[in-house]
Length: 210
Image (tube, rainbow, N blue to C red):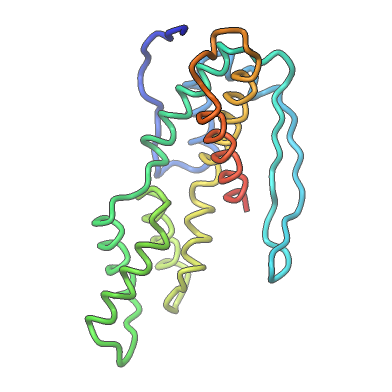
């Protein structure tokens, strides 16, 4: 198993514009990874759901020559990204944020205990998103809308908020899976279970690209 030298954590400022966040994250990656990410092939196609057009799906293919060493670097960066920047918000943070948002749009005739149960439902349905994305979605809604949001509308805003980070996570997962499949030894230890999780992560990230 090849070990990589330690390096600083990935930089991240949730208040920065999406393109600046993306540039900062990319610039912190090892040069071989940056080269792979820059030379991959992107294909985008419309996605359709039960209600018609449902955003755009991105298919990203790495260039030839992905090695096990590339896979190690990609897995390390992916673990950092999903373990910190994209880590799901804590239940306490979610509940507090949702209750605060709903208080701006009080529902007439709804008992406080019912309102609390509604907030718990929201916390469950937004539980996959990082705290900063939920905060950004709530801030966007407060500043642009007059009416109480639906859970679906808030999920859409959360997905939009962290779409660039999920796009990077997907590409890293593709590199990790491709390099692990080369069998050159550097990617040793990935195993079929890890490869399956990488593919699942890639699929989840595609869903968030809307």
